[in-house]
Length: 77
Image 1 (tube, rainbow, N blue to C red):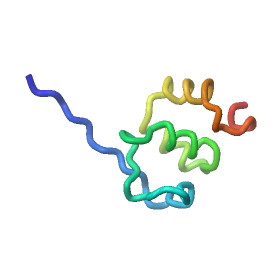
Image 2 (cartoon, rainbow, N blue to C red):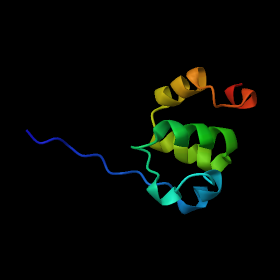
Image 3 (spheres, helix red, strand yellow):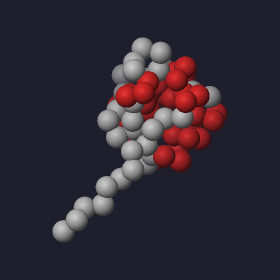
């Protein structure tokens, strides 16, 4: 039985400013979903939040907000 493979979700180039401390070209949502979600929630603008909501499960975002130690208190609110 063949498994469906999900396409790799690469980040738009305009998000590079949010990932100043990592190798941006190596980032993909499949490899680092938690890092990408936390960073976009903390520092992202409206466009990046909309992108996040359209490319990830809302339940996953809720879990990150509830359990993450890396989110700013303002972001969690």
